[in-house]
Image (cartoon, rainbow, N blue to C red; front, top):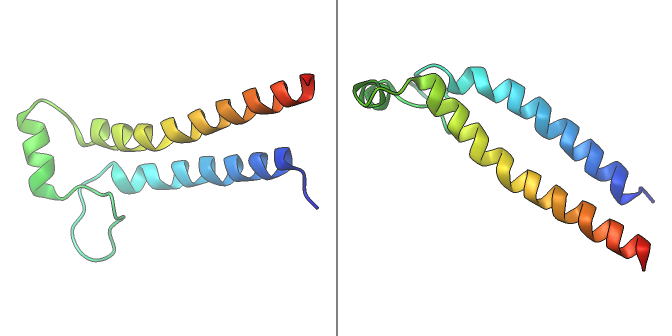
Length: 87
């Protein structure tokens, strides 16, 4: 049986790899069926530009809100594991 720590490290490796693959797909407006499900369309990119925001800002925001829950879960895991080891 695998250790929970090993599983967590493997998950984080896949998660980081996914982030690096997803960023280019989100960093440019897209049209059609082959787009990433969170990719921005040209009309929405124009609205962002009118607000003074870039598509790159959008993509960093989308990836950032994906990272926050994963970081939180990992912090909780570390805290629970350390408390359990102390007891």
